[in-house]
Image (tube, rainbow, N blue to C red):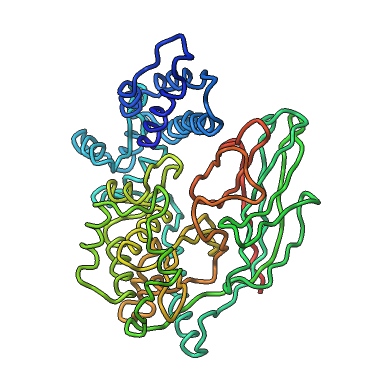
Length: 481
């Protein structure tokens, strides 16, 4: 984001030219303000540029997004030191000032200085006890809380899925039928009365064998548009009118059947890649601002795979390396991060999407075709947004890889179960996306709230995009026997 803003501001310096009667700040001043976190000063400078009557629509759009980007960062980093330190002391009373200072320096306690004030990421306190192994030992769960319920479910489920696939000699097994109710509610008076609200909500993809029998049961609006599967982000689009003092509510209900994907191939079964093929060429290249083969990525690939040449073992070694070195932690908004894999490497942690993007980037850099997939995890008691990946193996096709679920450690000794998530997926999924940062159908006018993924929804009206916090979403799931 910093590089983007500096290049953009340099462009605008020439765009305004001599039509301005006041002196424009030079590039160095602007760069220094942004890097120091002097957002108020940077906003004033940007205001000068927006006053230019020679700006192109794209330049104006990008500059307005930069202003919004600074607001998003401030939203993410909204905690003061008193509240964060109090949280740490609650769980770790003996934590010293020296330890806290070291955690801040390493960004295990994620923080930044904005307008001269140290501010912490909203979940920095909780994340510390996930990231730092010493701090983790002191964390006290609330009475009755069961933090390992998903682990217990998977420990039992995964060996069953493997056995079923072995007996039936099938890839798609163990169908689970689910009824979902999704609701998106725009808060009262966020939009002027009478104005039309436009919303995009996540919807199950139909171009995967993992989903069948998708049936839309009801919608809150009689008119809607379901995007084609050719779009990276599968959505259902609706519009509604704003009424004073009332929320604007959108939603739908549907049922669908989701299958587990269990691939039982051995490493030696994988064929050599056709390096002239479209899949190989497209999905082993750099892409956008996040999938970039930097020196850091190249070094990480070398460390992870060594001299390995087998495509599956390359992918598995990368998977194990990430699983061993980068603990899960809650993430700041992706739209505020310049390059997500680099962020993970620097900060030594990541959530599901962040480590998935690291995996995809490293796999591509190692010559293994990989791409994004995401939506929701629908496990009983653990319904949430979730991201994973897919890898292409010659002779097999696309195979799911869920990096953040890690190895099934309770199944050590049975490779098909232990490494299940390097080539399989459980059935409790709602698959929505098969790429990042795609277009929407119908097209969105304003900048997206989520610039990488699409799981919560998107909302706008003719005056602006509505960022998270100005509307709520909810997914309710019923399991049908």
